[in-house]
Amino acid sequence: MQAVDTNSGRAVYWGTGRRKSAVARVRLVPGTGQMTVNGKPGDLYFQFNANYLGVIKAPLETLGLENEYDILVKAEGGGLTGQADSVRLGVARALCQLDPENRPPLKTEGYLTRDPRAKERKKYGLHKARKAPQYSKR
Image (tube, rainbow, N blue to C red):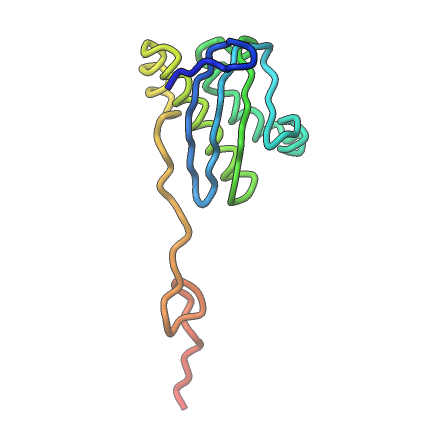
């Protein structure tokens, strides 16, 4: 969904990403390539971890747009890994709104696929989802 920012008059593109229990609402705004997550600089929020930052910027690098859009994120739930993957999905979805021609290269790289893996629920009579109490013969 494209919207126009009332303060600056710039186009804004939205995308929502999810992974495990993390949810990221992502806005792409024309800019210089800055990333802000929950009001903090992106590299500080993701603890200067090159893996997390690389995962997040991968869709932009695929299209060669890494220095043309600012990424504004509101991330909730989960840990840093889940949040980083959810931001990547949100960025990819926002790029598809920006231009429908962006969809095929992002699809082939797998950036538009939501990872369905989540924690399995605990079952009654077990310690965890599958860990059973120790067997006792007597």
